[in-house]
Length: 116
Image (cartoon, rainbow, N blue to C red; front, side):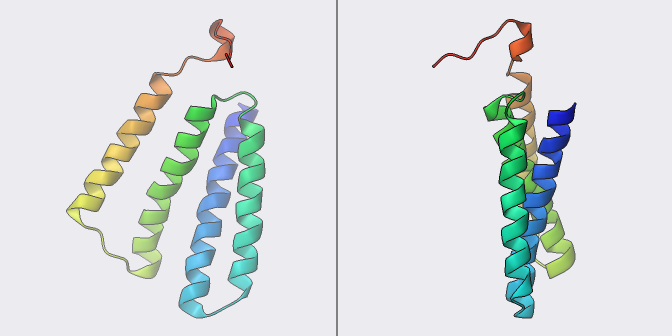
């Protein structure tokens, strides 16, 4: 459970950092770039720890996919970006893809061992 919480934090840090990047561009404020750097660094650190117990493919798909989903939603709400039918279909496809990756990955605790 701890590693899933770290993955959730990594996703939240990534979303926050990316939104600060956009906020800095819109408001011409340099503080946002510093906050972006801190949030993205914390995101990668949290992600790197979470993959100790979560399969890399699952963790990365969730980190990137859920991040894209929420960044798109917040961009619409905070920055008045548009949502097209194609964008909505893409987001639905993204969520389905993440679910399929998660369902198709067995954990190491079930007797699966990593092979190099």
